[in-house]
Every structure is written in structure tokens, then in C-alpha cells.
Amino acid sequence: MSAAISRRVGTEVTAAMAVMWIAFCLLVWIFGASPRGTAWLLVEGTWGTSYGVGQVLFKATPLLFTGIAVDLALRAGLFNIGAEGQLAVSSLVAGAVGARLPESVPALLGIPLVLVLAMAAGALWATVPALLKIRFGAHEVISTIMMNRIAEGVVGMALAAGGLALTGTVRTPDVASGARMPRLDVWFSALRGSAVSFAAPLAVVAAVVVALSYRRTRFGRELGLIGKNPVAMQSEGVPVGKRLAQALVLSGAITGAASLGTVLGYKGYFEEGLGMGAGFGGIAVALLGRGSAVGLVLAALLFGTLQQGGLAVNAVVPKELMDVLEGVVIFAVAVAEAQGKKRS
Image 1 (tube, rainbow, N blue to C red):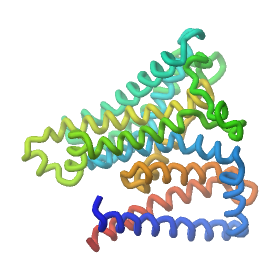
Image 2: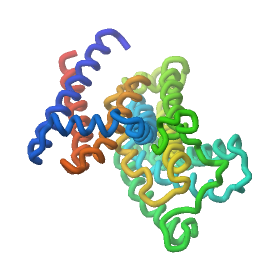
Image 3: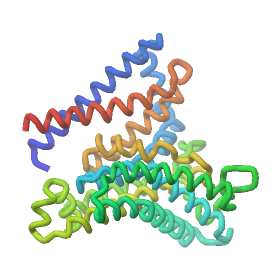
Image 4: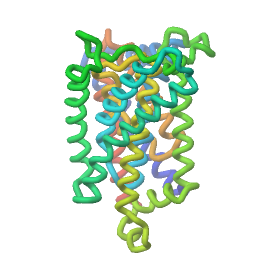
């Protein structure tokens, strides 16, 4: 990334953060609370205690995985709105497979096996819009939204009528202990009581590895060039359609890895609605992170802070206010980027 582009991106992100702060102050004031006092409550309930830090990291983990996934698609010029459905299906697979493993399965086998199958489920769910894109030219926004709706029905039907749920519930049986992600408080006792697991550092590693692949692999470089000018890349002999399909499928697979933090690292089973919102939250993370591993991690931490902060300020203002702020950030980043491109 050139110095000029870096400065422009920095300006856009700064502008988006400023708009978010203004919106926060206005909304809190409308509810009759003090912006400064509410902001203090938010900070105190998140980064002010070791438990709050652990909860922020826990909530940021699936957001980081889905942010990486959405960012990968964006690099190729695709908008994967379907991470929500891909995560739901892959989480169901993680819970169902993990519950059927023998209790004696070792973690070195159980966790990778469940992870691979969950990622395969996410990839498979993204294959449909990928095929519709390259075969019929269907816009991925429409087809991925369609797959989100189908995922809702498939997950509900599999739990209720497919025999995957415990009788009278909407959850799978507990996964085998050998398929559980260990909590971080095993090593860091200060985080005791929080839900953060070793899925959090794995998400950071995934962000670094994927970011490096953009510069150091042919596939990664081609994705970036296709996103800028697919016609030129087609004339150079690059299989554009194939690369677009691969980008969507790989995006779905990475989304499936988010089940590490929710199913395997938190609940220990899948229940209907688990992880809901992380797919759409990944869009915000990707837009704010701007393709940088550091940017994606910081963006995931920001939105993880807002999610946990909503619980901290719920006695003063509705926690849904944090969801509004997330939307404000997406809108502000989009506007700032459009204005930046006009000036460049």
C-alpha cells in the first residue's frame, strides 16, 4: 500500500470514528443520559476489568473470523453478505459432529476434525452463490442473502425434525471434551469467568496468514488485481470466473472457522441463534479493517467492545444503541471512501 493510499485510508477511518463518537453522544443525550458518564461505564465494563477484557476478546473472535472472510471476498470485488448463513450452517455441523465423537477422542484429533468439517460446511454453503455467479452472472449480494434465509430454515428443520437436537430443546448434545477449545483462563487466571478461548489467538494468526497470502502467493495477488480490473486480468489469461468462485468458497470456509469461538470454545454445543449477528458484524470489521491484519484485529476489538459495552450501559441506555453505532460506522466508512476516491 502506497504512502498516499495509507494516508487516505487513515483519514477515512479517523473520520468514521469521529462520526461514531458524535452519534454516540447524540443518542445517549436523546435518552437523557450523560455521554461522558455513559462512555465511562462502557470503558469500565469492558477494558476496566480482567473479566471485561476476556469478554471483549470472546466477542471479537467470531467477528475477526467473519471479517477476514468478508475482506477476502471484497479483495476480489465481491460482497459476501452470506457469512451469517454460512456461520449458522457450519456451527450446526460443528455441534452435531462434535456431539457424535467418542468422549475418549484426543484433542489433537477432535478439534481439527470438527474444524475441518465446519469449514467444509461453510465452503459448501458459499458454493451455491459462487456457481450462480460464474454460470449465470447472478449478483452475489442477492444470492448470499437468499442463502442466509435458506440457512435459517435448514438449521431449524435439522434441529427440530432432523434429530440433531435434544428432545424438547433447540440445541445439540454436548460435544465431546476432546473437541472443546480450552479457555484462555487455563494460562491466564485473571481471565477466569470469561468465555474467551484459544480460538482468539487462532483468529489473530488467521488474519496474519491471510494478509500475508495477499502479497506472497499468486492466488492472493491475482485476487487483488481482479478486484481492481477483472477485464484486464481476463485479457491477460487469468481465469477470472474460477478465481471469483474460489474467493467466495474460501470466504465461506473461513467463516466456518468462527464456530471455534462459539460452539467449541464457549457453549460446548450448538443452539439455534448461537453466533447470530457475527456474520453481519464481519462486514463492519472488513470495511473498517481495510485489508490489513492489524486493521482487522483492531476493528474486531472495537466492535467486540461495543457488544460487551452494550451490556455494561444497558441500565442507562438500551444496549441496542451499540448496534446502531455499528451501522453508523459502516455508513461513515462507505461515505468517506467514496469521497476519498473522488478526490484521488
